[in-house]
Image 1 (spheres, rainbow, N blue to C red):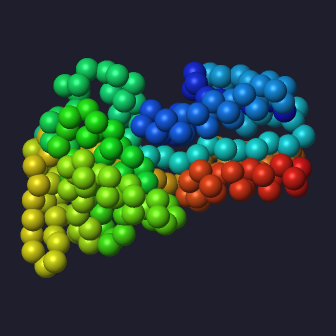
Image 2 (cartoon, rainbow, N blue to C red):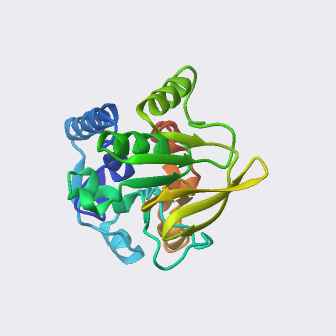
Image 3 (cartoon, rainbow, N blue to C red):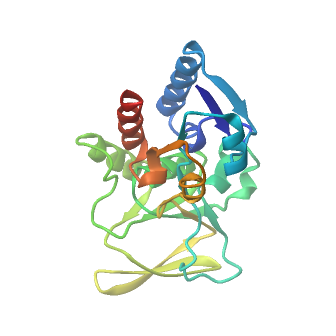
Length: 240
């Protein structure tokens, strides 16, 4: 087995998640150790194209390109609004200059990713509001974990707004509807923590390009997060 990684580091979004969740950082370390013990050849900074994959002479190709976490194009925002995607927070989460993120922050998306980022922001002295379209926060979590993380965030000072309909993001403010009324919250920085979409470009390019068997696992097949990636990878490994 040879693992190609287009960037200069392994872990993808799990590496980013590990910056705010020590347990996930430990899990990533365990995965890297298992890969090393299994004798997998690792090549970082190695992007894949149909030509390069064909030249490698593989009998089977597994695509695990994950998801794209970006700012949705349909987000109504002014050009002067400071809106970031999760990957754009990497340098700040790694200990970059605190002025990179404003004092008041709105997190758009109340899933596990949004709640974890909210916790990291609180620990670094930010005033945080999490805005979620549904009534439930942390839907990826079981109980009582979901209750615990919500309770901990609120105790630490976060404001969690559910059943919110996002209207627009302007410079320094986010407007939304809740309970039939139009509300707004101060936000020097807005972080989009939802709306991930499968990165399917490479899989589409490789399928049908030549005769090798091509498989896809993880979020590039549909957003299943960490659990879905593990289950899909295990099933495919047994099949191969």
